Length: 460
Image (cartoon, rainbow, N blue to C red; front, side):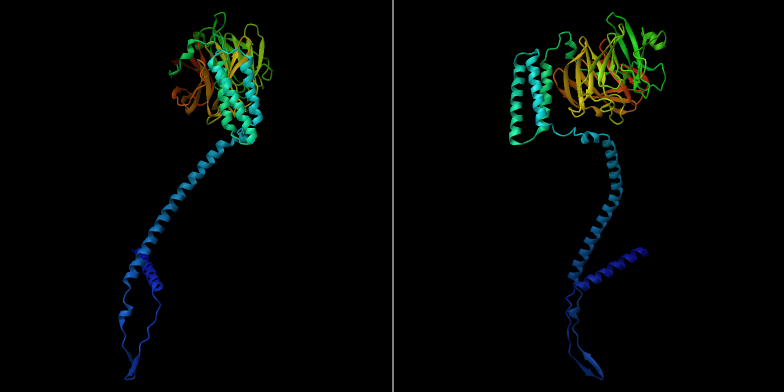
């Protein structure tokens, strides 16, 4: 009550002050006369009549002032709550982007130089001229025509000094993928599988801790049938900081695998720093040959389990040693290069600076052990948790929570088309995925997840 009276007094004082300021300020002189030793005069009081009109105007001004003050106070209170939240969000985003700053520092997001564009266009011309084409008709002719026009556009950019290199680079990426699709692929590589897209994934049909220790959170496991028809289940654990491995464990039957009995261990190298040691969890076994990233190099090693011989294949410009690992929220170290098998093909997935850290997919000919085809995607490798290939289609996963993953992206190497609107859930038992690949023999996906081995049935 006292506070109300105080407020009212302040308002009245303000009114008086405003009225005084609003008055005309004129004085009136009145003639008087002396009567009985006193000064007597007649005054017309109407000249001091209460200024009702001015009072109403001042009252309205005061009301508007109060409303403005109330609005300002409300905005101030809201701002006091919002600003800390905005600062926290900004700090969080800044922290998350900090690990990608090197991309900008190294100029990976700068536009390509015109000279580089011309060189890549010439490489595509050479590819079209020097290799057999699976489609020698219309599509090949259209690509050649577009390449010629593309080169003319680059020449115009030279002359006019007008640069739109990012758009040109995207067009070049698309043309490159079309050239890859035109090139001859062996008939035994093209199968009916290419007409099928994965539609769903089952709940885990196998959930088992690895036989070594729960501390082995990085590694790979799977199922293979060699060229003699011998079936094996295999496990490849990583030690030495979850980075390196030198041995594999094999079980001849599923029953032995589940019971952890009758196993056989195979050594690929005699030390973790040997040139043939395994680096990263991208290992896969296909028809009796172990494929993996060679120690400390952007190279693939192929270890034949029968002959014990090792072949090596260099991946030009491939990022390695945690340059482009799988990340999403948290990075899984040493996942720069990983492999997948598909029907009768071997694939390798990695990222390059030239492709701005985006995923690159290469098909590997297992007979000559060389890269035959390479596709470039727009999928930033650090934005996904893992990838695998089924029926010539690259699939990528992302983290939902500790116990759920989602397949959200697909790139079809047959058509060059991308789809980032998928939503196929996958159950899991831990946050990080070390290895995920498809086995065309049993049509299952195999995952190494926080030390656990999981398997899923794929549906088409």
